[in-house]
Image (cartoon, one colour):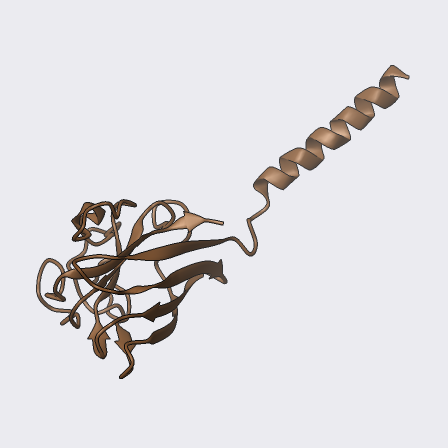
Length: 172
């Protein structure tokens, strides 16, 4: 009887340990955008990880038509009315600001958002170099939309203007 109990307990323990080391397939995160700097911007940004890439999907309204800088920022805090509580761009590699497709850029440098004539932006990007968790993880950080286009050159942040929306990235 004790042998059966000990065997059953061992099997259950091994199963639980195996579950702990299994990758979290289908894990995702989300940020609800809060209007900042007197804007009327609203929307969501979703993040999911698959095949070594971070998929970013944004649905945003209330933007001015045209290009807008779009970045993951260091801190998951959007409490300041101007969004500055999110601090600077997330930069785990210690690189200079640059174009997201170049080898030298902040981890948080994302492709720009493009809003149509109605101020709506629908966005999908798959990125290397970012993840949901770990040293390059976005969970617990923030995503920020800027008023202007990112020039991908100016240091330290691309000269993309005031922060018109900010959302804390949370796992779900």
